[in-house]
Structure formats: C-alpha cells, structure tokens
Length: 434
Ligand SMILES: [Fe+2]
Ligand SMILES: [Fe+2]
Figure 1 (cartoon, protein in one colour):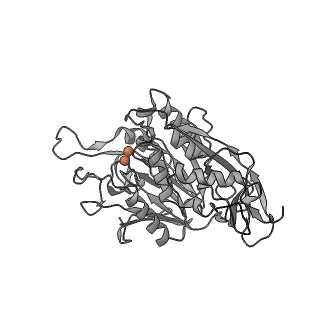
Figure 2 (cartoon, rainbow, N blue to C red):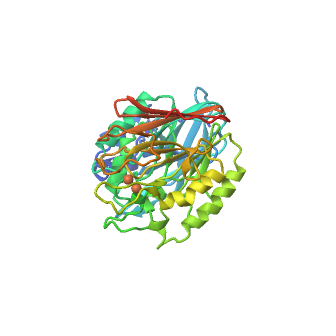
Figure 3 (cartoon, rainbow, N blue to C red):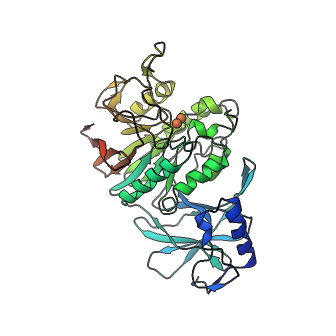
C-alpha cells in the first residue's frame, strides 16, 4: 500500500471534531483537527482520542492498539511500518463500542501479530482518506530492558498523577513499557476519572505499552458498591487467559528475559457476580508458569501479601494477609524472583521471603507505594518483615525495573527523581541490597 494522497477533513470528521470539543472537555487531542472549513492539507487531519498501546502475551511479536472516537464509524484501520521504510502495512480495527456511566464510548481495537523482535516501528490510525500522525512502537529482544512501575494512582483529581507520570517518563526515556499496580482510578465507574487518567498519560501510552493491573477500586460503582469492572475491562484489552468468565482479569506476558504474571486479588469483590476467581486463577497460574521458558518470573498483584497493624487499633495484628496466605506458598513453589504489590499506599522493601519468613531463597517482595493524591499518613505500624520504608510522611513515588538475563534491579524514586531504595537480584546467587 502506498502513501495516501492529500488528506482532507470531510464534513463528518469536522462535525466529529466539533462534538469532541464539547463531549470530551476540549481535549487537546482534537484541536489540530478542527479547521474552520474542510481543507486540503498534507498534514495529518485525524486525531483519535486516548490512543494507547496495550501489552500482549508475546510483546516481541505483537501489540494491541486501542483508541476512542466521538462518534461511530466503519473502516478504521491501523497502518504501521518499520521506521524509516516506505512500505506501509495495515490491520483492521474492531469496533468495540461500549456504554458505561451513561456514556457511549466509541472504541476501536487493532491487534498487530506479525511484528519482528528488536525493531522500531511507527503506526497511525487511518479513517478513509484521513490519517493520524505517526506514533512510535518498539518490540524487545531477549536482552536488557527497563520499565516503569507506578503504584495506586487513584485520586480526587489527577494533577499529581500527571506530574509524576510525565516526569518519570521524561526522566527514564529508556523505559520500554509502564505498569500501574491497580486502583488506577478512585471510582471504577466514574467516566470523568478514566478520562482524566488517560489524559494524564498523553504522550506516554501511545508510544509504550501499558500493563494494567486490576485493583479493588476498579470494581466500585458510583455508590461505592461492587460491580462488574466494565470500564477497566473495556479500556484495556489485556492478553487472553483462556477463561471466558475472567477474561482480562489476570494474564501473563513475556518481555525480554522475564515472564510477568499479572494476578487479580479481587475475589472478595467479584464473588457475588462472578464467583470462583481465586480457584480459577490458582489452576491457571501453575499451568502458565509451567509453560514459561524465560530465566525470570515476576508477579504483579494489587493487594498486599502482608497484614499490618494500624496505629490505635490494637485488635488488628501483624501477620500475613489473606492474599498472602493464598499466593505466597505458590510463589515459593513456582520459584518467583520478585513480587510487586500495592493497595496500602506505602513503599516497603521486605527483601526475600520464603515460607512466610525472611529467607534468601524466596522472592523479593516490594510494596510499591502511592502515585496519586490519596495518602494514609502515619496509618501503618512497621512490619517485622519490612527492611526499608519510604521517608514519612510519604509523597508519591515510582519505581524502575531493569532486567537482563543475569540481573534484576529495582529502584524506587521520589517525584523529584531522588532515589530512596535499590534492590538487586542475581541469577543463582540471590542477593538484595535493599
Ligand atoms: Fe488504593
Ligand atoms: Fe486497593
């Protein structure tokens, strides 16, 4: 397929853009597309909303790209090419429009399945004769990579989250993808919060894949009752897990030398409308890990594995949480290397734990902190297994994970880029500098 000829904004696109300014709160994504009259131009004339890459099971060969429009249309196409090459390939997009919180989301999803590892591509969305700007897309090899890990970003407004995410992404241009550890938004039904969150990662999520982890707040409706996490499940087309009931609830993917397992800790919340999440997941986890061939195994799950005492609540004892009781023996059995958790809005490096005790043969356990503006100052009493705690009272923080076939390095940073913790895991000879 050759380069399209001159792009024109037709009447439909112009109307869609004008609607977009009102419906979506004037997102800057649409501004450049809203000329006063249909015009002839050699510049892109189409600006899909919330254009985002989502991780796939085999990131070296495939990628999911999703976007929204402000109206329904047929024939959305994703065009892509190796950067610097003329030849353009294309993939059709599925219309996955859904309704939630009283709003219809005109959503499109394309899956690229024939990518070459260790390559730099670029992609754009095409709607008839109109197309978006090009956006970068990279595939990994088996060597070293790094990624960004953000804890709970749920917020009353998303300015702090935006600032943290944008500064971290700018500071760590080498990052290949980014993770959010769950409680992405404060209220999983509130469309305004999802849009604010997606707006905040503009310029990041279009160029590096997103790894979503479901938190309990993704399951809350606007009355703070649990419900099917409709928005989460639709916004993030996560990899298949061979479960019809729990599709996109949990999944795994390979990136470089690491097999990542994204688990779901919300069986208490989902029990009344989708029972069996815990049992389905345990069986899946054993089989999934059995089939993995990478040197490293890393788990990402929202709720923490330890139970903390709370100041002025003497009846609450220190120990292992119900989530830890279920998963920690599995992490021991399956030889996981690192376990990342969240939910408690505090950063804690516990070093290595095996059989519920400090032991270098077990996984490194990192409780990842807080990335939004919901903070619990002074709430938790330090746990006997904590080795390193963030300075109190806590501000936002984020982490980087760097993985080579020989070594894993986790670094925790404050928003200004100062380092507060570093831990390393070596193959064979396990060691933590936390
Ligand atoms: Fe949270
Ligand atoms: Fe949570």
